[in-house]
Image 1 (cartoon, rainbow, N blue to C red):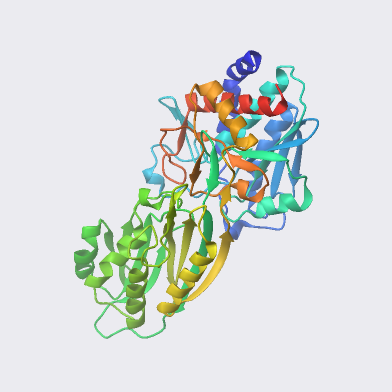
Image 2: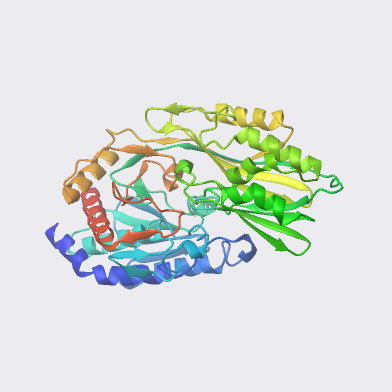
Length: 463
């Protein structure tokens, strides 16, 4: 393995250069940009093209699967998968970034940019690990396939398409979480609640005509924008300025912008939910229509600013993966309809039906309709499985640390494939900035993760 690790070090500058080019592509899914030829938008297709070009230059066999996914493969024999993705969540507020989120700037030994850790950095790292294994002269006794999805952040349509047409690996790991090994992923329930809120404003009171907050269901919302027609700034300032909001005259009314702090929905307590901040202030304000005011108060009572679902009646936990998490992610008031989207992550030993029954009862209790858009069972691979033990051994060989497998609230492609767990790329003690501003990977960690991946892949190869 000395030769393999030496090749990783000698290729590292090229690895950083390739990753930098990929990071500069803003591969964010936007529904309005979809076309028949680009099912997730042309920028996401461009990211796949870039990734496959890197792999082809290295001598990998590549395939583009209808611009929905792709793969790069080397070797012969049984198939082993590396499950990565090239789409990223929106960057949020650019002014919160130290450097522009798609400039891929290196500063103080860190490479900054959306996707450095989630998941472009680890995807490129896996390619370079396989290249080093191949270039070392080792006989490849397996086919190693880096599968690159394009819709991980918005619905897994990419991996569903892959499974319809392509071979399923016998075993896989996903470089889309943390080291040493993630052998459990919480179950996921995502839903929309809504209600028509027609009615007329009350004479002399401002009218709340629109609300828009949040960007993605898997991100803690960092902004809510609410427009009050016919309002005076003074009363709104009294209510919202203590929450750190901005209140500005705009046209025939006043725009209120409530700010929060984004975080990954798997750990919503690490963020500051702007929707909760907005709802917490409406008690002290009179506005119309009366129906809108009343329903916002009901909504506030149902979620109550919580991240663990107590007021929804679904709070639960286990010793393996901890508590259920609840992220009230998106809110809108548009053309007389109020709606919210929510992301629930429940423990690996939890009961999904308990969660579904609980949220349905909660919605019914306030007279809102509910639509469950996603319900995924938890993932759990026993710690004594050969897959987990091999990955832990590889991690120890490079880092000198004997790690223990653990569970997370995040959901990866491992749920969609048999015999799969997450493996990196965040190391213990490193700052978790996925889905947040100033996402970065340190160059030393990028190099180290490539060594770890090479060590693991060599062991699955029989070296």
